[in-house]
Image (cartoon, rainbow, N blue to C red):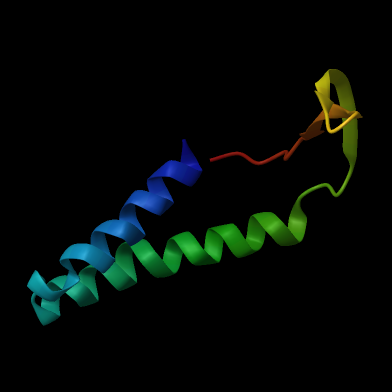
Amino acid sequence: VRNSAVRTLFQTLGTHGQKLSKSMWEDCLWNYVFPTLDRASFMVATSSKDEWQGKELGTRGGKAVHMLIHHSDTHG
């Protein structure tokens, strides 16, 4: 959900940004974009780097394909 929301925000700004006034751009950047980037940077810096290879999902090209699970202990 978080990934989709960020993608939607940036796609919307890229597609319709020229229609925003200077004050709307400032509001969007300072209240949404910069805090989102700060939060993402913090989460990357403090998240666990542990990964666990889950069950086999099937094969592709004769090789097993496993589900890769990464747990991020983030709140917010």
